[in-house]
Length: 267
Image 1 (cartoon, rainbow, N blue to C red):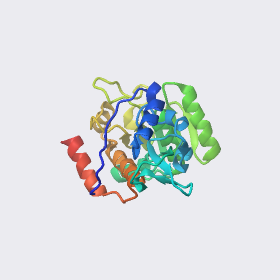
Image 2: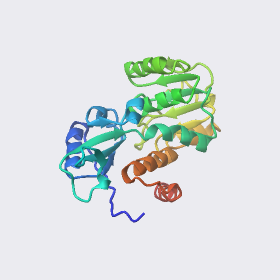
Image 3: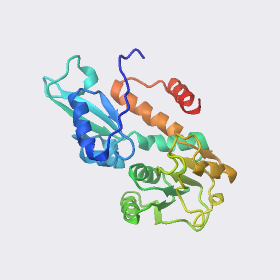
Image 4: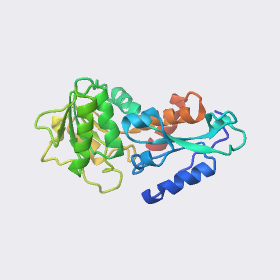
């Protein structure tokens, strides 16, 4: 798109996230993306929260802004020279990408559906709230530590009372199982759920937020069971496109982005 920009990857330990954000701001980065395990931690580390981050409770996109001569805060893309005063604003672009990816890849209408959600970290919390906002009728949440899932369930009951929240595994069938854990990222990872508690053939479809590897053990098992299954490539695409639009102020070229992603991930 003719932008003299570069997108860089940095591995940052959670205890250094505050320093990393401050360093990027001082070096006049346009913005950042954050992934596991930084999304919830960043809520308390950015200067301002956009409505999307406040609504969904996690930050995956940061935009740096400068104060102009009139005292107005504007994105750094608007400045030729670095402004004297800058700040960070946190956004969430994951939430809208989740239902869009599920609709496109699995042809599933979430309204009135039954969903089992695996994981209650940053991605899981955002997914749970977004699913409730989409009108999911029954939502079961399974997490390694129960209190975290219980807190999300209480929040959903207060904000989206039409969604019935449960902790643990369902006893019957569900329309969709979503993996929002990191299990499947590393070779040799176990399944993100207990098969004896929930056989996967009781699910109508499976969605894994992981996109590399392209087929996790969870997705492989779903396909063995004859269930429609999708990885997180479309979710990655749409959250990235929205982040790009926040930073640049220009519409993202979705088709070109999809081609680049598929070439990189599928080879």
